[in-house]
Length: 472
Image (cartoon, rainbow, N blue to C red; front, side, top):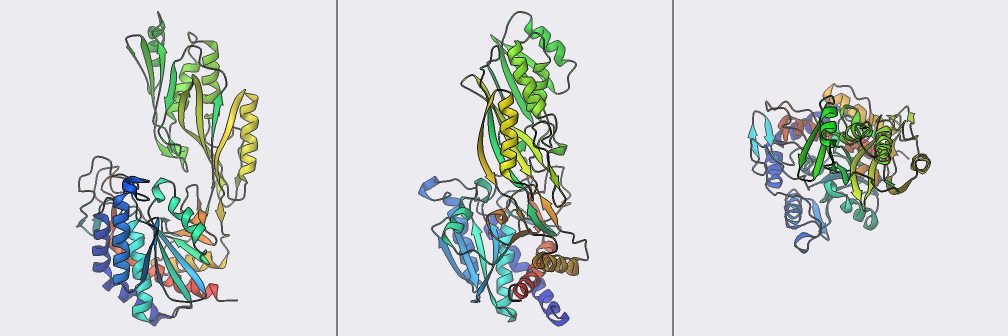
């Protein structure tokens, strides 16, 4: 247990690191590091190369050993123990998008907030982790392990960086990934993706498309049909009774569009799947070809719930709750409908069972089925020593509930062994319009006080994990 005297010294160090962390974070945010694989002849483009170079320069300035590993990722290290504690961050960001009130790449500090793309996802973790390692050197804290900070450059675009790390580097004995919410995320559901293809081509429809990415409930979908006599009027009459359906006719084509509500595949319950809505609408139009109605009806049925019941794969467990399933993308390929599915299955379940259930469902309907990926779940029991000590640190520093939780999303942790996601995202009331201030949103923001608090939490966490690793 860390003494009160040492806790006080750590708190003082965290407070006097406030200004330095802000300036270091600003330096990283000013670089628009959207990962672009292979751009400019570099692993993830020029901006990611620049931000990695800047991060390594900052690390060396804090007295750490730092190196670039082929431009795919960087490592900053401190200590020389027989065990390694890994800290994992990423320097790449999602594109800035639209509707910013402030400048995305010229960070603004106001009202206790720092605003700019990447301040919360995930450049803050890189900076705070550097100050964690600096604390051990500056304060002379006891440490028997080596601390290694991973600086990734493609977390937002497929995680090729962490795959390369796993192939090239020894695995840390325990890893903390500050890319989630506090308290401890001790499990991440399995992520299974596949596509199902109708073997029968469209009879009347020319195309049906929806969504843009597989891991989001789509907010739009559309179908194109020939402008046959009387069909426009029948579609418009039905659309007038349906919510979120519009019909437009232009030349020899009719376009039927559905508007839904987007949501992440990990939490689809609040979404409204536009593919489902469109398919259900078309399936209920008697004037359409019977075969096309049957195809649309089948797809609508598979999406009638978000728990995999209609797909024949429903399951749940105590740590992580129910399986969730969505279709994020539908497309017409060579005249046939292809629907992409994204499933998040419980941590004690197996992807093989998901595959078997889906194959049975689609085979019975005469559809072909292709598995695209299966990222196995990770899970450390809530009563494991590492989860318990991290939970206790969080409770001691913040006074808040520290019950560990499981998510349906994925972080670097699922690529590692003995790893958890632990902080440092939080809800922000930035005094901004709805849809601003959060991760991936315009005017992404972080509280400076949260950086200081997180620094205390992570220093104490490394001390406690160091003890856990050396108990045997």
